[in-house]
Amino acid sequence: MVAVGEFHEEKDVWNGVPLHYLVEKGWSKYAKKIFNHTPEMLGFFSDKLQYPYPWDKYGQVVVRDFVSGAMENTGAVVFGDFVQNTERELIDNDNDYIVAHEMMHHWFGDLVTCENWSNLTLNEGFADYAEYLWFEHKYGKDRAEYHRMNEMNGYYSQVFGGGAHPLIHHYYEDKEQMFDAHSYNKGGLVLHMLRQYLGDEAFFASLHKYLTDNAGTAVEVDELRMAFEDTVGEDLHWFFDQWFLGTGHPHLDVTYTYNDENKVLLVEVDQTKTPPGFHPLFRMPVDIALYFQDGSVEYHPVVISEKKQRILIENLKAAPVTYVFDGKNVLLALINENKTPEQYKAQFKHSSRFMDKMIAFTSTNDGNADLIQSLGRKVLSFQIYGYQCYCR
Image (tube, rainbow, N blue to C red; front, side):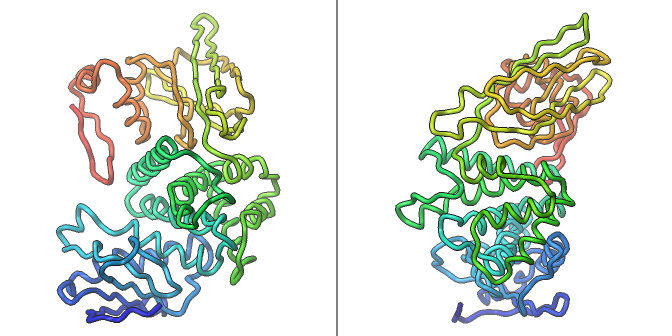
């Protein structure tokens, strides 16, 4: 890549690696702030992947009239001029997500690249998930979950507006069609599910193996699967077949029936309404959350593997005030639960999870104002996009 222009250049060094920040001359005093946290990010991703940044320099340059938002090139990233903002403007609209995205490509895309456009998510899915990882590390879980919620909405919008296709897609008409909310959004969301299923230690150890084994080569999705399987010693065809090679996502109807006399909860899960053409049967490890009046929560791990499945949860200490099927907010799925407004209010009050609160806040039939009023004058606080929000 060659960029020619009248730039202002700021220089820095991270871990012996020269850093170059190139902006238009009018933006000179904001150059390092525009490329937010670059040295810290390089250290964070190097540590997470257990694979040091693999190139001899790292440059970031702003140009006008660029064909896309940004583009990774080995050792030098091009950004559109929309990233140029003052320090005050960057408070509300920082560039963390796009800086993290393009940086991650230096491992996933430059060090190891996909062998064809069909496997583009091996580049873009990881870069997309880098945004989540950085937000989680720097600003906390809630901001990361807010970002993931928006990624889900972007994916669903494409599916409802233009249809679904496999993540590894061999039947595109033009390569530009691969740069969509599947390769990006769904790719990152699927990696999040895999991380939650395996746990952080196994997940990042697998990524280290994938990068180490395939450095300097072009790969397809099977290389990624085998890196995970060799690390954890488990056949993961079921996961890759449905999420990478299959189409769509599950549509779930979840019904709860509690028997107070026997202290038993029956959970019925129906995925028969998943649209035709989608993967025919999704296997889903999930933790069902039960919340109680005293503020405690119990998680009951189950594996959904049937079109219609019944789960019996016995010997409960009391009647739950509410339930959440995807209790740890992991699944890429549309879930319809037969909960009352009172149960959604309890979900908002008792769950500490961002998505649980957002779902409860938008699901009450009697309005959000009534939801807040019903919780009394006690102040409830939760994080949205890194900011503390208070509801009285």
